[in-house]
Length: 281
Image (tube, rainbow, N blue to C red; front, side):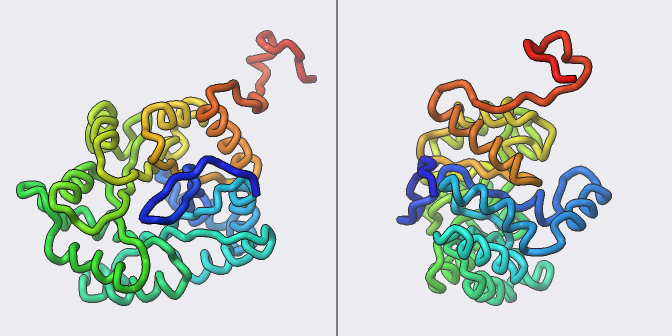
C-alpha cells in the first residue's frame, strides 16, 4: 500500500481520505431512479471491493458505512487482495425505527461486522442534542457508553454543527464527529464560513462528508475547497462509482495536500475542441 497522509483519531491511525459508501450502497441524494441504478451496478460485494481496493492500495484503508454482512464481505475481499487491514467506520441506526432500546443490538452488530469505530447515525444523534443547554441527552450519552464498553471508538454522525458544540461543551465521550461540509452548502445547516470556524475550533478531529455535494460539484472544485479549509487533523470522506473515479479523487486530494498541479486527464467534449492543444478525433 502507498502512504496517503494519516492522522490519529481515538488512538487509531486513519488515512485522511476515507472511502465513502453512498455511491455504492444506493444513496444518491438525487432520485429514486439513481438509487436504483447504483444498487443494480453494485449488486455483489465483489463490485464494491473493486472500488474500495483502489483506495486501500493508495493507503486509504478506511471505509464509512452503516456496516452489514454485504459490507463486511466486501471489506474482507479487499483485505485478501491487498494483504492489509481495512478499518470500518460504522454509522448504525436503531434496528427498529425510533426504538432507543434497540441500540445495544446495533452496537453488537457493528462489533460483529468488525467495526473499529461506531457512531450513532444522524437520525439517532440529531434529535437527541440539547442545543439550549449545550449537551447531549442522557439517552445519547448512554449510547456512547455502550459503544465504548463494546471495545469500539465512539463518535457522533450528525448533519448539524450543534453536535460538535454540544459534545465539546459537555465533555462527552466522543473522539470525532461526522459533518457535511462542501462549497455548495449542500446538506449544510449553516453557511460554510460558520461551519469552517466550528470545525477549526472543534476539540476533536472532524470527518467531513459530502465534499462533492453528492455529485453537484466537480471533483477539483469540491476537493480543493475542503482540503484547503480544514485542519491537518481532519479527514475527508468521499465516495465514487468506479475505480477510475477513485484514482482521480486520490490524485486530486494528494495534489491539494502537496500544493501541486494534479496529474489527471480532463474530460472532453466537442465544445472544448478549440481549447485543447491536442485535439482528439
